[in-house]
Image (cartoon, rainbow, N blue to C red; front, side):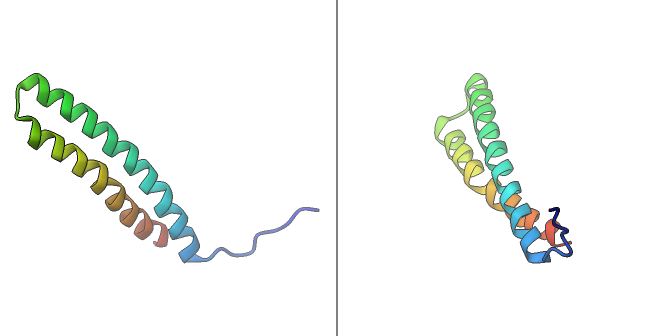
Length: 75
């Protein structure tokens, strides 16, 4: 027996979209950390600044993507 979906809550959609975007942000942060560290090593930049920027991108990107995803899902 098929079931018909009549309505979906705005907050429910926004939460799911925020979680999905946070996961995508984690992957983007990891890629930026890896490629940024590799490029900085080739360029001969100081290691401490590059590693801290990589760790910051792994932490910051999922948070920002999650917030923006929640807002876009609500809209």
